[in-house]
Length: 445
Image (tube, rainbow, N blue to C red; front, side, top):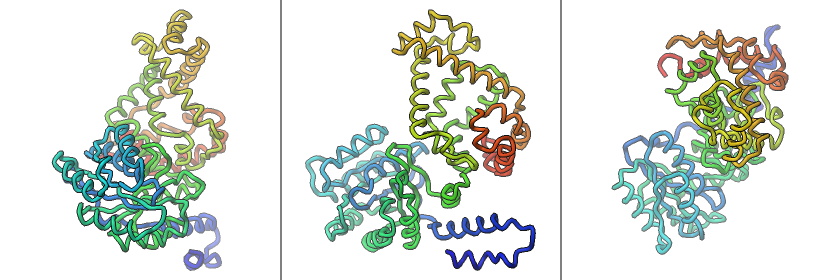
């Protein structure tokens, strides 16, 4: 990598006035992308057409959890997934799969009695094909080390179920040993893609990623936590961008699109325009915030923001507070939720809400203070013109730095370098085509 960068960047030949730092940064970025870019998987599932995907890997790599995450991800995108537990080696494997699948409302198949993984795999695949499932995921046994028995069993299951894609699941902390692992699995079964798990730990997966890239096995997803939705499509440029602390705007925009459905976005803008902020709108925005996941993760996608903005533990605190507020709002009447008059909330109403939600009256009062603060911010958004369909540039033109500086909390403004930092951040966001699509615009979306 160093040699390649030295070939590309010859500082002596650069004309005066060039930004050397930027040229070097760009060269490092491009080289990292070249090393980690795994190419495309051999097979991509298609909706409406039954596909069999088999998961393989060592024991403890997070295979069973990853199967459910993979199914859950595709279920959200409109597939009909199903899970088959062909792991008869590990005690409790079927229980774990059953628990995960039930939680995610995904059909599953397995057996406590049958010890032949091939038989279970074939029966499960046949059953779900009859039930018109278009993504049948087969979870196989792992071992604590590579054994001949493991590879033989994998080969038999593979031959019997004829999977369209074999996914190798690997723990990110394995480092450079990943090369041997990926190669050994690839020689035994036709591994078509890789998922790297536990990317939320100290290991950032660099060793594993480069080793897998060396075996030319495309990484398709990365697991970033224990929860069902902590699972990301591996896209090399945004990944390297975040690795180098440059932010990932396209990831940030995808998060927003996932959280606020397309049909709700014009509605949200109309509410902004009216400037009437009700408790119901606050409730909806809280739901959206919770869907976006940990705030530290969201901040890491924005250039110029850092996780120092949210000290350790603050993430959980703020999420717990939002959930408490939502519980209190669940005890409110429609009249209270739809009113934009804070005076409506008198003492007797607050006492009733506190009793109904099992909270203290002071907590209800605290929530009402938060509502007033947000209503104040919301009223400042009133001047924002709603762009006509297909003219999203006016959105970013209207949303100038002065407007934003009034909306952002003071500590956040300070964190990004005051007004100057905000202007450069908005410039970088405005020049990014993803920003145009923030509210579902950009013409053809």
